[in-house]
Image 1 (cartoon, rainbow, N blue to C red):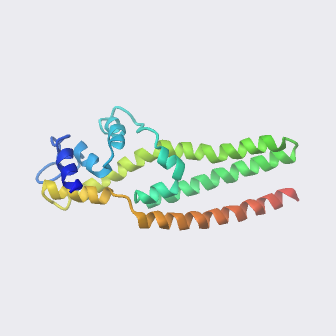
Image 2: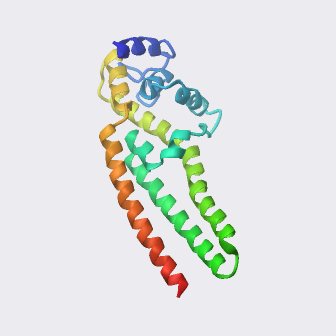
Image 3: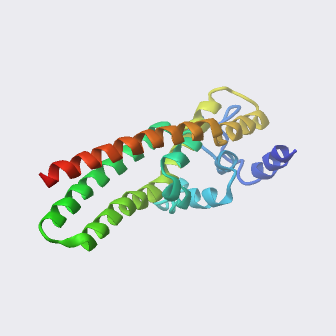
Amino acid sequence: MESNSSTSAVTTLDTSVSTTEGGPVGKVSLAELAQFARNKVYLKEWTKLHEGKSVFAGFNPWAFLFGIHWFFFRRMYVEGMAVVAFEFVVLLMFFVVAMTASMHGAGWIMSTWTLLGALLLPRICVGIWANIALYKRASKVIREVAGMKLDDEAHLREVANRGRGSIAALLLAHLIFIAILSLLMLTLLGLGFLLSL
C-alpha cells in the first residue's frame, strides 16, 4: 500500500524530536509535519517557519483560487468562514467606493478597476496566510494525536489520516459559497439601488 511506504519514507526525515512514547509533547517533528501534509511543497515552506527562520510560509495558489473551498477541504472551517467574512467586507467596501466614484463622474473604468482590486486583494492575502494557518492546524493536530500515546507507526498513521482532505466538507463549502454569493448579490443590488436614489 502507498500509505505504508510513505510512512516509512517520511519517518527517515527527522525522528530526533518525537511527540510519542516519552518524547516531549510540545514538540512537533518534521516527520510528523510531512506525514500530515503529504506534500513536499508544504513541508518545504513549513521548514523555514518551523525552524524560526521566517514568519512567511510561501504563497498558496490553491487557497488563492478556491478560498473557502480550500479551507473546508483541509478541514479548517473557522478559517474558511473568516475568509468569507473578510472577502465580503472588502468587496462591500470597494463596491461602495466604486459606486460613489461612478456617481461623481469617475466612469466605469475606475469602477471596474476598483471592483477588480476588491476581488484580488483579499485573495492575495488569503494565499499568503493559508500555509501559515495550515501549519498551525498541523501542529495542533499532531499535539492532539501525541496525547493519545500511540506507538510511532500508529501515531504517524493517525496524523496522516487527520491531515487528509475532506470531500464532504468541500461539498458543504460549496453550498455555503452559493448561499453567501446569493446574499452578496442581493446586498450589492440593494446598495446599488440605495446609492442611485
